[in-house]
Length: 127
Image 1 (cartoon, rainbow, N blue to C red):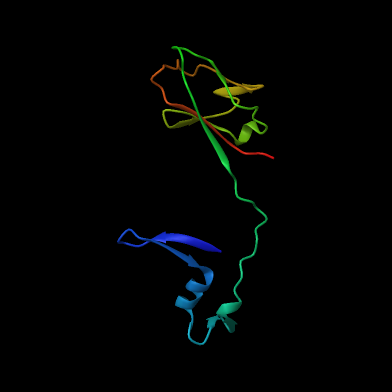
Image 2: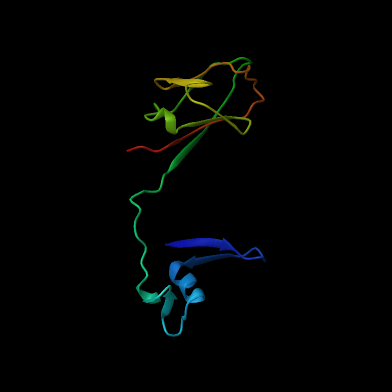
């Protein structure tokens, strides 16, 4: 498994588990001692967690008029609990502040939305 890390000079560096084991162990002899056991660094392999990466759809929604309550969505949200509805960078709770009605998002008027508000819906792509 690789990960990206930024140096103090601002450069991105990609490292893997073998890089870390080499730093902690003996990279020349390809070994690391953990407790009473010695391991070959070159045999380290990632183990899948079974979780797959999530692709997100982020859709800006336009407030057409003050007090608007309904927003048309490009598609129905299949898993409402996985969606994030934000107004001016604040997340609101499904079932409390809004709900879905088919392909519409219905705002529960926690406050009146204005055309100057920045509104987004973010949800995972489902197959």
